[in-house]
Length: 373
Image (cartoon, rainbow, N blue to C red; front, side):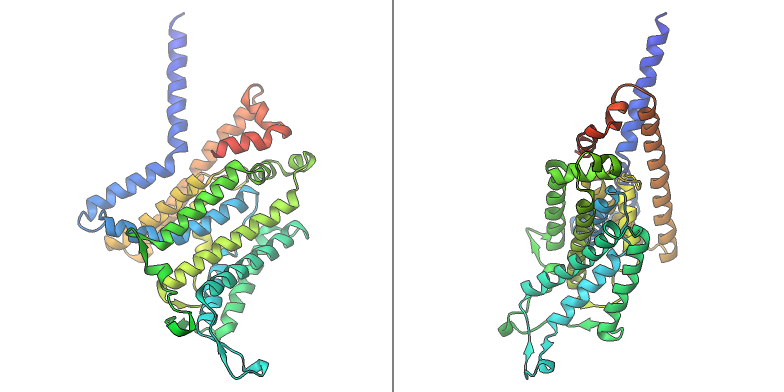
């Protein structure tokens, strides 16, 4: 008689440990990666300066991934973020090189200040996201198709700006107020790169939006069950448009940082970065079906990809093997996500307890928001 409770308790403990490992898999993967590459390159990989440099690289992926997370939480996908990143850099390069006003009958060249360049570039990213959102929300175009079309359209427009050439040398002229663009990619505050600080600020803002605002509850509810959310009064169309706008903005910010780091802007910048962003979201534990995921996990996913890629470079692994290893990590993350959320679906469908509560439409915003905390 007494053996059954003991066995049951043991099973519960093992299930809890398994669930804990699943929930924290991105963090554990990051630790394993750091330990392995520290052992392989003890004099270069674990140094503070190298970690900060790697973090500045991660900032690009993380910014793209955080915008992508909002779209995926809504049950969509944004394949245009890499092209938006490239277009943002091209707009910045065009403005920093000076705008020739002769077509308007003015024999002069306008050099806008850096803050204007940044705002215009971010505005272009927001506009691209708005077009995506309207196509998906208003015209019911499938997210994959709409954003794939924008991927090609935006990349083509970026190439048309210079016939495929690259903008170089953003030195500008101090008297004209447009110098210092490289500060975004090279300057530091208390030894921390500006790009990393921007990443942290964006992460805190978006985390607050998801966890503390009504918009965040709307987003989790519409991603978990759009029809139920709509019947509960959630403005699902407005939410859908805004997540694509935010994705465009974060991609534009990433484009500005990358352009500053490279001190050049090319129309091919950000190619395949949309796949990296999706991978970071998946590694971070978000469900591609929508409604599940958080900023913390997405940041960890971006660090896993960034630290893995840089570590492979440091130890001299072939670029082809780098692609193989990165792909293997992504496949493993998808499999673990399938195991994790398959278990939750079984619990929800088993009848009784929290599963039924989570499935009820009125409780969807609250339960989803608490999952993201």
